[in-house]
Length: 249
Image (cartoon, rainbow, N blue to C red; front, top):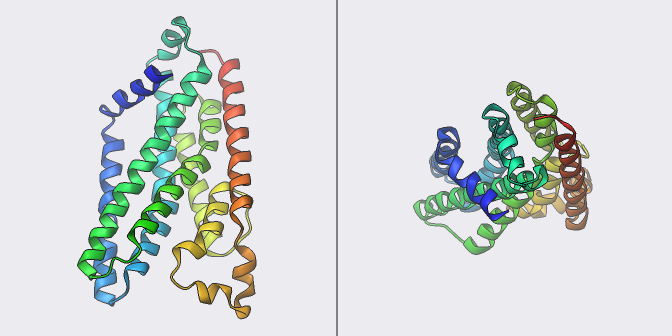
């Protein structure tokens, strides 16, 4: 397993897209900082913007493309056969790719938060940095698990690169828009947003007021959020493994 994980890290050196998207993610808070400074808003607002757009719009698309490309490259280079010849199962390869995906999500989250903190220094306001960093790390993990259905689409589409990419973009946009419109979609990414909203917003008093019952009712608890993510992760990993094991390489 360790060798499979290390192999995934070696492959990323040849993927300029992955490195480029990570760099873009780290730069994202810069224009947000400029907007917040000009509007004379607070560090909490900068953090909220960075989470909403960075973690729930950009990060899922980046992770989805990384996930699909990590499977497709095995088909393109016909390395599945080589790996199987040395007694490495498809399930083990899949787990290595999932662990790598989670690590990349952590790298994104921490890098983005460093940029946000720098923006806070510019604003002269960087309160509760450790709690915000902890929230970013937790959300990085949750978002990575929420994108696992992409693996199912990728192995079903086998070598058709455009299909999982379109699915990733569509899935992310649907979840993002439904979250903004307070739609109760039973999708993991939307569920994460429904739990995270009061924790990333500096206006929790507004969310909890009686006049905004629709918002408070839309928000879910942490156990509900974890349950949804775990259920979808188990289904996604299980189906992907079954499809891989029954598909010729």
